[in-house]
Image (cartoon, rainbow, N blue to C red; front, side, top):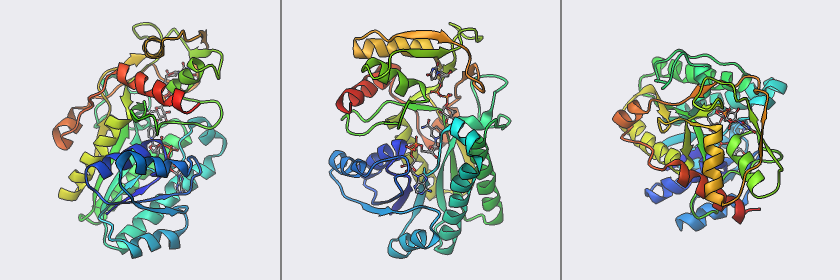
Length: 331
Ligand code: NAD
Ligand code: UFG
């Protein structure tokens, strides 16, 4: 059985569907601090399969131990964490405590029960402002906000854990910009309040909930002056986790992998693609740069292709189409 922490969240829910489709039994632990219980039934509906669910906080050690006591956990995919960059600057202690302490409790419990296979949700944010693109896994690591620092510190903790005990097998998956939704429109990204991220914001402008997108900067050194990112369909990203589980089951080590498409699209490219997907005009205005943003960020996905046997399949049209389908079904 695979334990999925944060399995009710955006990426976790899609990954649970892919794991169930691949024939894995799963257990989910989530405290719903950034998700809703309804998601669980939607995972069941899409996959046609059932699973175990524990409503608990990873910080509650006895609850985490109970899961390992009651189930034969073979590997863990660890999504649970707080993820808003801006908020992490406001409440850093909560970010460090929630993200790092929960990982320590999880790993201590795993070690206690002899489960040493882990797939961890890291982020391209660990590359900071890269000297060049595409970004390879061996580029220098650097962070600029508490959220990013939690990811980098956890990567370091997990590398140290492997050095201390070579039976561990750990995949550090560095996600680029996951967007889109399951094509059923049942699960997707549903942020509380006004979205921080580009595509959820564009979706709300398209559906009429928000009036106008602010494009943060049009004077970057990119093909149209707006920021360039490696947008990846969440279903492709989720399939990368199934491959990573297979990898950690068959090897040992602590290895980082980029999960991105290798192609960069600008903010205005996304606006155009989304207009095409929804058949509506997206109002936008040029606004000042957002502090902390970088000009360009996209992956070199070769290592994942070679070592995990994974590559992204879906293009930007499909990402926008599935995001729009989810948005109209859930507004
Ligand atoms: P999400 O917020 O939708 O999912 C995280 C889930 O973890 C939520 O369901 C939340 O309720 C749960 N959770 C948080 N803290 C918990 C705790 N202490 N105990 C139990 N459950 C807890 O986020 P997501 O977009 O699915 O991201 C998943 C992971 O991937 C996170 O670690 C995030 O930092 C990382 N990541 C996300 C992105 C992105 O753009 N979405 C990019 C890079 C990395
Ligand atoms: N953008 C706008 N207007 C908006 C929102 C975003 O123009 O309203 C622009 C940004 O300036 C940036 C691009 O759209 O150029 C993408 O911004 P997002 O906020 O969607 O994504 P980021 O690349 O800034 O950040 C994401 C995740 C972080 C993660 C980082 C690196 O949100 O958690 O990727 O992996 F750290």
